[in-house]
Image (cartoon, rainbow, N blue to C red):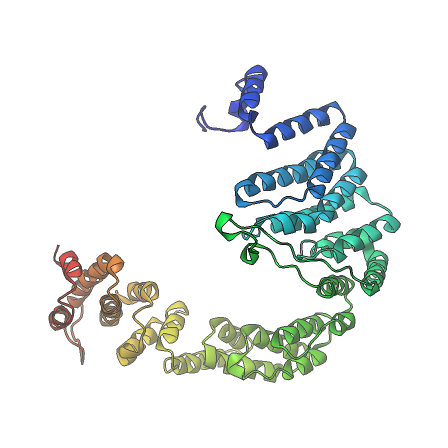
Length: 476
Protein backbone atom coordinates (compact mmCIF):
# COMPACT_ATOMS: atom_id res chain seq x y z
CA UNK A 1 0.00 0.00 0.00
CA UNK A 2 1.39 3.40 -1.03
CA UNK A 3 2.27 5.90 1.69
CA UNK A 4 0.00 8.90 2.15
CA UNK A 5 2.99 11.08 1.32
CA UNK A 6 3.63 9.38 -2.03
CA UNK A 7 3.13 11.81 -4.89
CA UNK A 8 0.13 10.44 -6.81
CA UNK A 9 -3.30 11.62 -7.95
CA UNK A 10 -5.20 9.98 -5.08
CA UNK A 11 -3.08 11.59 -2.36
CA UNK A 12 -3.24 15.00 -4.06
CA UNK A 13 -7.04 14.82 -4.21
CA UNK A 14 -7.03 14.51 -0.43
CA UNK A 15 -5.58 18.03 -0.18
CA UNK A 16 -8.83 19.49 -1.42
CA UNK A 17 -9.66 21.83 -4.27
CA UNK A 18 -8.80 25.05 -2.46
CA UNK A 19 -5.37 23.92 -1.30
CA UNK A 20 -4.54 22.50 -4.74
CA UNK A 21 -5.59 25.77 -6.39
CA UNK A 22 -3.30 27.76 -4.14
CA UNK A 23 -0.42 25.34 -4.78
CA UNK A 24 -0.88 25.60 -8.56
CA UNK A 25 -0.83 29.39 -8.40
CA UNK A 26 2.32 29.26 -6.30
CA UNK A 27 4.09 26.70 -8.49
CA UNK A 28 3.18 28.46 -11.75
CA UNK A 29 4.52 31.82 -10.57
CA UNK A 30 7.38 32.70 -12.91
CA UNK A 31 6.74 29.65 -15.11
CA UNK A 32 5.28 30.82 -18.43
CA UNK A 33 4.62 27.28 -19.66
CA UNK A 34 2.73 26.31 -16.53
CA UNK A 35 0.63 29.49 -16.65
CA UNK A 36 -0.13 28.94 -20.32
CA UNK A 37 -1.18 25.34 -19.68
CA UNK A 38 -3.47 26.37 -16.82
CA UNK A 39 -5.10 29.08 -18.96
CA UNK A 40 -5.70 26.56 -21.73
CA UNK A 41 -7.18 24.07 -19.27
CA UNK A 42 -9.55 26.78 -18.05
CA UNK A 43 -10.44 27.67 -21.63
CA UNK A 44 -11.15 24.03 -22.40
CA UNK A 45 -13.43 23.73 -19.40
CA UNK A 46 -15.32 26.82 -20.49
CA UNK A 47 -15.75 25.63 -24.11
CA UNK A 48 -13.85 23.51 -26.65
CA UNK A 49 -13.94 26.42 -29.09
CA UNK A 50 -11.97 28.63 -26.71
CA UNK A 51 -9.35 25.92 -26.19
CA UNK A 52 -9.03 25.43 -29.95
CA UNK A 53 -8.59 29.18 -30.41
CA UNK A 54 -5.93 29.32 -27.67
CA UNK A 55 -3.98 26.41 -29.15
CA UNK A 56 -4.16 27.86 -32.65
CA UNK A 57 -2.98 31.21 -31.34
CA UNK A 58 -0.01 29.62 -29.57
CA UNK A 59 0.95 27.50 -32.59
CA UNK A 60 0.87 30.59 -34.80
CA UNK A 61 3.06 32.48 -32.34
CA UNK A 62 5.65 29.69 -32.25
CA UNK A 63 5.58 29.34 -36.03
CA UNK A 64 6.17 33.06 -36.68
CA UNK A 65 9.00 33.45 -34.17
CA UNK A 66 12.49 33.85 -35.62
CA UNK A 67 14.82 33.77 -32.62
CA UNK A 68 17.05 30.76 -32.13
CA UNK A 69 16.21 28.38 -29.30
CA UNK A 70 19.39 27.88 -27.30
CA UNK A 71 20.19 25.11 -24.87
CA UNK A 72 19.06 27.14 -21.86
CA UNK A 73 15.49 27.50 -23.11
CA UNK A 74 15.27 24.29 -25.14
CA UNK A 75 13.85 22.07 -22.39
CA UNK A 76 11.05 24.50 -21.57
CA UNK A 77 10.32 25.01 -25.27
CA UNK A 78 10.02 21.26 -25.86
CA UNK A 79 7.74 20.97 -22.84
CA UNK A 80 5.51 23.68 -24.35
CA UNK A 81 5.25 21.82 -27.67
CA UNK A 82 4.61 18.54 -25.88
CA UNK A 83 1.86 20.18 -23.84
CA UNK A 84 0.22 21.50 -27.01
CA UNK A 85 0.34 18.07 -28.63
CA UNK A 86 -1.18 16.44 -25.56
CA UNK A 87 -3.99 19.02 -25.38
CA UNK A 88 -4.83 18.43 -29.03
CA UNK A 89 -4.76 14.66 -28.62
CA UNK A 90 -6.36 14.38 -25.19
CA UNK A 91 -8.92 17.19 -25.08
CA UNK A 92 -9.67 18.55 -28.55
CA UNK A 93 -9.72 15.27 -30.49
CA UNK A 94 -12.47 13.53 -28.45
CA UNK A 95 -14.77 16.56 -28.71
CA UNK A 96 -13.87 17.96 -32.14
CA UNK A 97 -11.71 15.55 -34.19
CA UNK A 98 -11.85 17.60 -37.40
CA UNK A 99 -10.50 20.67 -35.59
CA UNK A 100 -7.93 18.51 -33.80
CA UNK A 101 -6.72 17.19 -37.16
CA UNK A 102 -6.26 20.75 -38.43
CA UNK A 103 -4.36 21.74 -35.28
CA UNK A 104 -2.08 18.71 -35.46
CA UNK A 105 -1.48 19.54 -39.11
CA UNK A 106 -0.54 23.08 -38.07
CA UNK A 107 1.87 21.69 -35.47
CA UNK A 108 3.53 19.45 -38.06
CA UNK A 109 3.50 22.18 -40.67
CA UNK A 110 5.74 24.43 -38.59
CA UNK A 111 8.21 21.65 -37.75
CA UNK A 112 10.85 22.63 -40.32
CA UNK A 113 11.11 26.16 -38.97
CA UNK A 114 11.22 24.97 -35.38
CA UNK A 115 13.91 22.35 -36.07
CA UNK A 116 16.03 24.95 -37.84
CA UNK A 117 15.77 27.31 -34.90
CA UNK A 118 16.34 24.74 -32.16
CA UNK A 119 19.88 24.08 -30.99
CA UNK A 120 19.03 20.44 -30.26
CA UNK A 121 21.67 17.83 -31.03
CA UNK A 122 19.84 15.23 -28.91
CA UNK A 123 17.11 14.72 -31.50
CA UNK A 124 14.34 14.99 -28.89
CA UNK A 125 12.59 17.83 -30.68
CA UNK A 126 12.63 15.84 -33.90
CA UNK A 127 11.19 12.84 -32.07
CA UNK A 128 8.42 15.03 -30.70
CA UNK A 129 7.32 15.87 -34.23
CA UNK A 130 7.65 12.25 -35.31
CA UNK A 131 5.25 11.30 -32.54
CA UNK A 132 2.92 14.07 -33.70
CA UNK A 133 2.86 12.47 -37.17
CA UNK A 134 1.68 9.19 -35.65
CA UNK A 135 -0.99 10.98 -33.62
CA UNK A 136 -2.11 12.82 -36.77
CA UNK A 137 -2.97 9.47 -38.34
CA UNK A 138 -4.82 8.35 -35.21
CA UNK A 139 -6.91 11.52 -35.15
CA UNK A 140 -7.65 11.13 -38.87
CA UNK A 141 -9.11 7.72 -38.04
CA UNK A 142 -11.49 9.42 -35.58
CA UNK A 143 -12.32 12.41 -37.77
CA UNK A 144 -12.84 10.46 -41.02
CA UNK A 145 -12.33 13.51 -43.25
CA UNK A 146 -13.15 13.41 -46.96
CA UNK A 147 -10.27 12.23 -49.15
CA UNK A 148 -10.49 15.53 -51.04
CA UNK A 149 -9.47 17.28 -47.80
CA UNK A 150 -7.10 14.72 -46.31
CA UNK A 151 -4.96 13.94 -49.37
CA UNK A 152 -3.77 17.54 -50.08
CA UNK A 153 -3.04 18.10 -46.38
CA UNK A 154 -1.02 14.88 -46.14
CA UNK A 155 0.84 15.60 -49.39
CA UNK A 156 1.85 19.05 -48.17
CA UNK A 157 3.09 17.70 -44.84
CA UNK A 158 5.04 14.91 -46.52
CA UNK A 159 6.81 17.01 -49.12
CA UNK A 160 7.89 19.48 -46.45
CA UNK A 161 9.19 16.76 -44.12
CA UNK A 162 12.71 18.08 -44.53
CA UNK A 163 14.09 16.21 -41.53
CA UNK A 164 12.08 13.01 -41.79
CA UNK A 165 9.65 14.12 -39.10
CA UNK A 166 6.59 13.01 -41.12
CA UNK A 167 8.03 9.79 -42.58
CA UNK A 168 5.55 7.69 -40.56
CA UNK A 169 2.57 9.66 -41.85
CA UNK A 170 1.78 7.33 -44.76
CA UNK A 171 1.64 4.28 -42.51
CA UNK A 172 -0.42 6.04 -39.85
CA UNK A 173 -2.90 7.28 -42.49
CA UNK A 174 -3.07 4.05 -44.46
CA UNK A 175 -6.38 2.84 -43.02
CA UNK A 176 -7.98 6.27 -43.44
CA UNK A 177 -6.78 6.69 -47.03
CA UNK A 178 -7.38 3.20 -48.38
CA UNK A 179 -6.05 2.23 -51.81
CA UNK A 180 -7.91 5.09 -53.50
CA UNK A 181 -6.48 7.70 -51.18
CA UNK A 182 -2.98 6.24 -51.32
CA UNK A 183 -3.00 6.36 -55.13
CA UNK A 184 -4.31 9.94 -55.02
CA UNK A 185 -1.60 10.85 -52.51
CA UNK A 186 1.07 9.35 -54.77
CA UNK A 187 -0.20 11.41 -57.73
CA UNK A 188 -0.21 14.63 -55.69
CA UNK A 189 3.29 14.02 -54.38
CA UNK A 190 4.62 13.38 -57.86
CA UNK A 191 2.94 16.57 -59.09
CA UNK A 192 4.36 18.62 -56.23
CA UNK A 193 7.83 17.15 -56.78
CA UNK A 194 7.72 18.30 -60.40
CA UNK A 195 7.28 21.95 -59.36
CA UNK A 196 10.39 24.17 -59.05
CA UNK A 197 11.81 24.12 -55.56
CA UNK A 198 12.41 27.37 -53.75
CA UNK A 199 16.00 27.64 -52.55
CA UNK A 200 16.25 27.52 -48.76
CA UNK A 201 19.32 29.15 -47.25
CA UNK A 202 20.99 27.07 -44.53
CA UNK A 203 20.17 28.25 -41.01
CA UNK A 204 22.93 30.10 -39.21
CA UNK A 205 23.53 30.03 -35.49
CA UNK A 206 25.35 32.61 -33.45
CA UNK A 207 27.90 31.23 -31.07
CA UNK A 208 29.11 32.50 -27.74
CA UNK A 209 30.71 35.91 -27.40
CA UNK A 210 34.17 34.69 -28.35
CA UNK A 211 32.84 32.75 -31.37
CA UNK A 212 30.40 35.16 -32.92
CA UNK A 213 29.36 34.74 -36.55
CA UNK A 214 30.39 31.09 -36.58
CA UNK A 215 27.87 28.46 -37.62
CA UNK A 216 27.41 25.74 -35.02
CA UNK A 217 26.77 23.01 -37.56
CA UNK A 218 27.39 20.23 -35.09
CA UNK A 219 24.26 21.19 -33.12
CA UNK A 220 21.84 21.38 -36.04
CA UNK A 221 19.84 18.53 -37.50
CA UNK A 222 20.63 17.99 -41.17
CA UNK A 223 18.02 18.90 -43.74
CA UNK A 224 17.71 16.44 -46.59
CA UNK A 225 16.99 17.18 -50.25
CA UNK A 226 13.38 17.33 -51.40
CA UNK A 227 13.99 14.49 -53.85
CA UNK A 228 14.96 12.17 -51.01
CA UNK A 229 11.96 13.25 -48.94
CA UNK A 230 9.58 12.51 -51.81
CA UNK A 231 11.24 9.17 -52.53
CA UNK A 232 10.86 8.06 -48.91
CA UNK A 233 7.16 8.98 -48.98
CA UNK A 234 6.56 7.22 -52.31
CA UNK A 235 8.35 4.12 -51.00
CA UNK A 236 6.02 4.06 -48.01
CA UNK A 237 3.00 4.39 -50.31
CA UNK A 238 4.25 1.55 -52.50
CA UNK A 239 4.68 -0.62 -49.41
CA UNK A 240 1.18 0.13 -48.16
CA UNK A 241 -0.25 -0.70 -51.59
CA UNK A 242 1.90 -3.84 -51.88
CA UNK A 243 3.30 -2.47 -55.14
CA UNK A 244 6.73 -4.10 -55.22
CA UNK A 245 7.57 -2.96 -58.75
CA UNK A 246 6.86 0.65 -57.84
CA UNK A 247 9.13 0.32 -54.82
CA UNK A 248 11.94 -1.15 -56.93
CA UNK A 249 11.58 1.60 -59.53
CA UNK A 250 12.15 4.22 -56.81
CA UNK A 251 15.56 2.87 -55.78
CA UNK A 252 18.38 5.17 -56.93
CA UNK A 253 20.85 2.28 -56.94
CA UNK A 254 20.07 -1.42 -56.88
CA UNK A 255 23.66 -2.61 -56.49
CA UNK A 256 24.20 -1.91 -52.82
CA UNK A 257 23.72 -4.72 -50.35
CA UNK A 258 21.19 -2.80 -48.24
CA UNK A 259 19.02 -1.99 -51.26
CA UNK A 260 19.21 -5.56 -52.54
CA UNK A 261 18.01 -6.87 -49.18
CA UNK A 262 15.06 -4.47 -49.11
CA UNK A 263 14.04 -5.43 -52.63
CA UNK A 264 14.41 -9.18 -52.06
CA UNK A 265 12.41 -9.01 -48.85
CA UNK A 266 9.49 -7.33 -50.62
CA UNK A 267 9.61 -9.74 -53.54
CA UNK A 268 9.54 -12.65 -51.14
CA UNK A 269 6.58 -11.25 -49.20
CA UNK A 270 4.76 -10.75 -52.50
CA UNK A 271 5.12 -14.45 -53.33
CA UNK A 272 7.91 -13.97 -55.87
CA UNK A 273 10.75 -16.07 -54.38
CA UNK A 274 12.44 -16.67 -57.75
CA UNK A 275 12.89 -12.92 -58.27
CA UNK A 276 14.11 -12.55 -54.69
CA UNK A 277 16.77 -15.20 -55.32
CA UNK A 278 17.85 -13.44 -58.51
CA UNK A 279 18.23 -10.17 -56.60
CA UNK A 280 20.21 -11.83 -53.82
CA UNK A 281 22.51 -13.55 -56.32
CA UNK A 282 23.56 -10.14 -57.65
CA UNK A 283 25.22 -9.22 -54.36
CA UNK A 284 28.93 -8.82 -55.03
CA UNK A 285 30.23 -8.80 -51.45
CA UNK A 286 32.19 -11.92 -50.43
CA UNK A 287 30.14 -14.50 -48.56
CA UNK A 288 31.92 -13.80 -45.27
CA UNK A 289 30.94 -10.12 -45.49
CA UNK A 290 27.25 -10.73 -46.09
CA UNK A 291 25.04 -10.14 -43.05
CA UNK A 292 22.86 -12.78 -41.41
CA UNK A 293 19.86 -11.06 -42.99
CA UNK A 294 21.11 -12.04 -46.47
CA UNK A 295 21.49 -15.68 -45.43
CA UNK A 296 18.09 -15.82 -43.74
CA UNK A 297 16.37 -14.22 -46.73
CA UNK A 298 18.04 -16.59 -49.14
CA UNK A 299 17.11 -19.63 -47.08
CA UNK A 300 13.51 -18.43 -46.85
CA UNK A 301 13.40 -17.76 -50.60
CA UNK A 302 14.86 -21.18 -51.44
CA UNK A 303 12.31 -22.82 -49.17
CA UNK A 304 9.45 -20.86 -50.72
CA UNK A 305 10.72 -21.74 -54.20
CA UNK A 306 10.64 -25.44 -53.39
CA UNK A 307 14.44 -25.81 -53.31
CA UNK A 308 14.49 -27.59 -49.97
CA UNK A 309 17.84 -29.35 -50.40
CA UNK A 310 19.56 -26.10 -51.36
CA UNK A 311 18.03 -24.39 -48.31
CA UNK A 312 19.30 -27.19 -46.06
CA UNK A 313 22.75 -27.03 -47.59
CA UNK A 314 22.93 -23.27 -46.98
CA UNK A 315 21.77 -23.68 -43.39
CA UNK A 316 24.49 -26.22 -42.67
CA UNK A 317 27.31 -24.43 -44.47
CA UNK A 318 26.44 -21.15 -42.75
CA UNK A 319 26.33 -22.88 -39.38
CA UNK A 320 29.81 -24.30 -39.96
CA UNK A 321 31.05 -20.77 -40.68
CA UNK A 322 29.17 -18.84 -37.98
CA UNK A 323 28.17 -21.45 -35.37
CA UNK A 324 24.70 -19.89 -35.30
CA UNK A 325 22.69 -22.28 -33.11
CA UNK A 326 19.31 -21.35 -34.61
CA UNK A 327 20.49 -22.39 -38.08
CA UNK A 328 21.58 -25.79 -36.81
CA UNK A 329 18.28 -26.30 -35.01
CA UNK A 330 16.34 -25.37 -38.16
CA UNK A 331 18.50 -27.77 -40.14
CA UNK A 332 18.04 -30.67 -37.72
CA UNK A 333 14.29 -30.37 -37.34
CA UNK A 334 13.87 -30.84 -41.11
CA UNK A 335 15.79 -34.13 -41.14
CA UNK A 336 14.08 -37.54 -40.94
CA UNK A 337 13.79 -39.22 -37.56
CA UNK A 338 17.06 -40.64 -36.20
CA UNK A 339 19.07 -38.91 -38.96
CA UNK A 340 18.96 -35.75 -36.88
CA UNK A 341 20.84 -37.39 -33.97
CA UNK A 342 23.76 -38.43 -36.14
CA UNK A 343 23.79 -35.05 -37.92
CA UNK A 344 23.78 -33.20 -34.58
CA UNK A 345 26.76 -35.18 -33.30
CA UNK A 346 28.67 -34.55 -36.50
CA UNK A 347 27.92 -30.81 -36.51
CA UNK A 348 28.89 -30.32 -32.86
CA UNK A 349 32.06 -32.39 -33.23
CA UNK A 350 33.06 -30.22 -36.15
CA UNK A 351 32.22 -27.07 -34.18
CA UNK A 352 34.88 -28.01 -31.62
CA UNK A 353 37.52 -27.33 -34.27
CA UNK A 354 36.10 -23.95 -35.34
CA UNK A 355 38.84 -21.29 -35.75
CA UNK A 356 37.19 -19.15 -33.06
CA UNK A 357 37.53 -21.27 -29.93
CA UNK A 358 35.60 -18.78 -27.78
CA UNK A 359 32.68 -18.85 -30.22
CA UNK A 360 32.74 -22.65 -30.19
CA UNK A 361 32.71 -22.67 -26.39
CA UNK A 362 29.68 -20.37 -26.30
CA UNK A 363 27.80 -22.68 -28.67
CA UNK A 364 28.64 -25.89 -26.80
CA UNK A 365 27.73 -24.39 -23.43
CA UNK A 366 24.40 -22.93 -24.62
CA UNK A 367 23.39 -25.93 -26.79
CA UNK A 368 24.08 -27.57 -24.25
CA UNK A 369 26.85 -30.12 -24.80
CA UNK A 370 29.01 -29.80 -21.66
CA UNK A 371 31.08 -32.90 -22.37
CA UNK A 372 32.21 -31.47 -25.71
CA UNK A 373 32.76 -28.05 -24.14
CA UNK A 374 35.03 -29.56 -21.49
CA UNK A 375 36.92 -31.63 -24.02
CA UNK A 376 37.45 -28.59 -26.24
CA UNK A 377 38.74 -26.52 -23.31
CA UNK A 378 41.31 -29.19 -22.50
CA UNK A 379 42.41 -29.37 -26.14
CA UNK A 380 42.33 -25.65 -26.99
CA UNK A 381 42.70 -23.72 -23.75
CA UNK A 382 45.39 -21.51 -25.27
CA UNK A 383 43.01 -20.42 -28.08
CA UNK A 384 40.25 -19.18 -25.76
CA UNK A 385 40.04 -15.42 -25.30
CA UNK A 386 40.38 -14.62 -21.61
CA UNK A 387 38.95 -11.13 -22.08
CA UNK A 388 35.42 -12.61 -22.42
CA UNK A 389 35.22 -12.70 -18.65
CA UNK A 390 31.44 -12.95 -18.17
CA UNK A 391 31.09 -15.76 -20.72
CA UNK A 392 34.02 -17.71 -19.31
CA UNK A 393 32.83 -17.43 -15.71
CA UNK A 394 29.35 -18.58 -16.76
CA UNK A 395 30.87 -21.52 -18.66
CA UNK A 396 33.03 -22.43 -15.68
CA UNK A 397 29.96 -22.47 -13.45
CA UNK A 398 28.25 -24.88 -15.86
CA UNK A 399 31.27 -27.20 -16.02
CA UNK A 400 32.51 -27.06 -12.41
CA UNK A 401 30.54 -29.98 -11.01
CA UNK A 402 31.37 -32.61 -13.64
CA UNK A 403 34.48 -31.16 -15.28
CA UNK A 404 36.45 -29.24 -12.60
CA UNK A 405 39.69 -29.14 -14.60
CA UNK A 406 38.02 -27.49 -17.58
CA UNK A 407 36.34 -24.99 -15.26
CA UNK A 408 39.70 -24.31 -13.62
CA UNK A 409 41.36 -23.56 -16.95
CA UNK A 410 38.61 -21.10 -17.91
CA UNK A 411 38.93 -19.22 -14.62
CA UNK A 412 42.71 -19.12 -15.03
CA UNK A 413 42.23 -17.48 -18.43
CA UNK A 414 40.08 -14.78 -16.82
CA UNK A 415 42.61 -14.08 -14.06
CA UNK A 416 45.55 -13.93 -16.47
CA UNK A 417 43.70 -11.56 -18.83
CA UNK A 418 42.79 -9.20 -15.98
CA UNK A 419 46.36 -9.08 -14.71
CA UNK A 420 47.85 -8.72 -18.16
CA UNK A 421 45.68 -5.67 -18.86
CA UNK A 422 46.11 -4.34 -15.29
CA UNK A 423 42.36 -3.97 -14.84
CA UNK A 424 42.43 -2.88 -11.21
CA UNK A 425 38.65 -2.50 -11.16
CA UNK A 426 38.39 -6.29 -11.66
CA UNK A 427 40.99 -7.35 -9.10
CA UNK A 428 38.36 -8.42 -6.56
CA UNK A 429 36.66 -10.59 -9.17
CA UNK A 430 40.02 -12.04 -10.20
CA UNK A 431 40.87 -12.84 -6.58
CA UNK A 432 37.52 -14.62 -6.21
CA UNK A 433 38.38 -16.65 -9.33
CA UNK A 434 41.73 -17.63 -7.79
CA UNK A 435 39.94 -18.86 -4.66
CA UNK A 436 37.53 -20.84 -6.83
CA UNK A 437 40.38 -22.48 -8.73
CA UNK A 438 41.86 -23.52 -5.38
CA UNK A 439 38.54 -25.08 -4.38
CA UNK A 440 38.25 -26.87 -7.73
CA UNK A 441 41.80 -28.19 -7.45
CA UNK A 442 40.67 -30.42 -4.60
CA UNK A 443 38.24 -32.10 -7.02
CA UNK A 444 40.73 -32.52 -9.88
CA UNK A 445 42.53 -35.83 -9.54
CA UNK A 446 44.68 -35.39 -12.64
CA UNK A 447 45.90 -32.08 -14.07
CA UNK A 448 47.30 -33.95 -17.12
CA UNK A 449 49.70 -31.70 -19.00
CA UNK A 450 48.59 -28.60 -17.07
CA UNK A 451 50.20 -27.10 -13.98
CA UNK A 452 48.57 -27.94 -10.68
CA UNK A 453 47.16 -25.10 -8.60
CA UNK A 454 50.29 -24.53 -6.53
CA UNK A 455 52.59 -24.36 -9.55
CA UNK A 456 50.20 -22.12 -11.48
CA UNK A 457 49.78 -19.70 -8.57
CA UNK A 458 53.54 -19.51 -8.02
CA UNK A 459 54.14 -18.74 -11.72
CA UNK A 460 51.38 -16.12 -11.54
CA UNK A 461 53.04 -14.44 -8.53
CA UNK A 462 56.42 -14.42 -10.27
CA UNK A 463 55.03 -12.93 -13.48
CA UNK A 464 52.73 -10.35 -11.90
CA UNK A 465 54.47 -9.68 -8.58
CA UNK A 466 54.16 -5.93 -9.19
CA UNK A 467 50.33 -6.12 -9.11
CA UNK A 468 50.39 -5.52 -5.36
CA UNK A 469 46.74 -4.49 -5.04
CA UNK A 470 45.68 -7.76 -6.62
CA UNK A 471 47.80 -9.90 -4.31
CA UNK A 472 46.46 -8.05 -1.31
CA UNK A 473 42.97 -9.10 -2.41
CA UNK A 474 44.07 -12.71 -2.90
CA UNK A 475 45.86 -12.91 0.46
CA UNK A 476 43.17 -11.08 2.43
